Length: 253
Image (cartoon, rainbow, N blue to C red; front, side, top):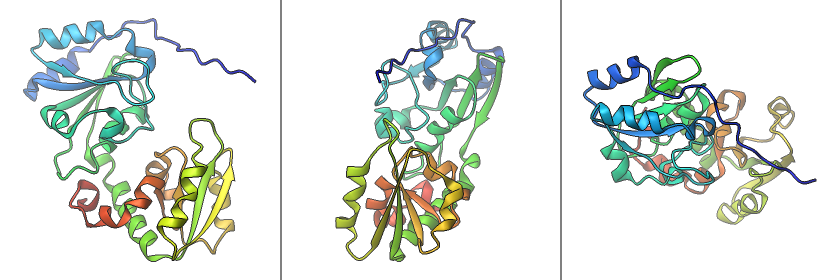
């Protein structure tokens, strides 16, 4: 079956409210990282003009798997996938996200989790649908990062690991998942393949000591509380020992 994906651009006004501009001015912000969900990307000209008029410089990028500059995918939660260097991130004083909901802007908070710093840049969320502003900071993910660190440590010490693999297009990583057995020959891996991650079925496998997620990487963070025995993402499994020893925000909170 052929599938055609089409953008559904927002047809209303896309601009920053006075509360957003006033907030940036009150914080004396002169350089922001600007991103938006795809339906708002085609109308960011006014936002650029508003920021320029306020004396605020814009830094943005074309993230992996996107087709327009400034588009943000909620599942890409690291600076590398945003195609931002650590130096570019450091030059940014705050992020501005144009869009609704929390899933996408949370990606900008998570993207900073591995940096060797405790200074996470705020994400100023500007919702064109309601014309409301909200702020996201590291406080919203501190509890999640504590659980994730515990899951990393449990993975290193356990002997029986369940690997979750989805067949969903764009999230299927079975070949990559199978390589984990070579990296950790002392562990026994059990592979669970499905079209969706069925959290309610996990407790049916009590012999599993911890889980490795190969689907959307946000499952490994946002859904920590759904895994009684802990879960980490596949990429972090390969780097677990290094991550635990790092002095990054993930290890400090």
